[in-house]
Amino acid sequence: MGKREDILVRFGQRVRALRQEQGYSQEGFAAECGLDRTYMGGIERGERNLALRNIELIARTLGLSLAELMQGL
View 1 (cartoon, rainbow, N blue to C red):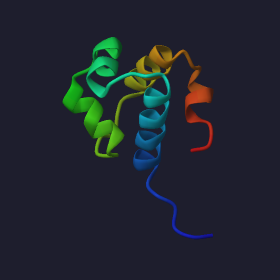
View 2: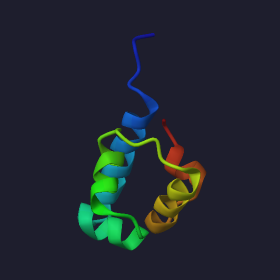
View 3: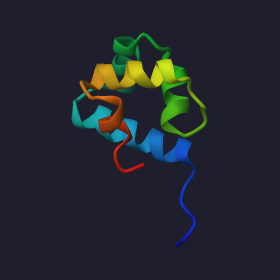
View 4: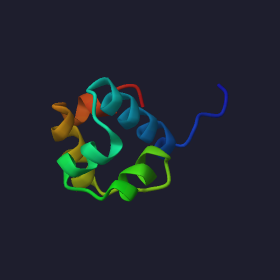
């Protein structure tokens, strides 16, 4: 098996793809989650090791369960 990207990078890519599918801008999505836009940018770039509470906020805002959000990671 080849080297997989870091879990933070994979998570960030998944959040970005789901956010875009739902038509959110990064800034609008961050506001809907109650998170700072620059923090959300760091998540999407795989630079942030975010807290489980923030993962739950993201899942809830996307209308997904935690399991659905994590699917494929």
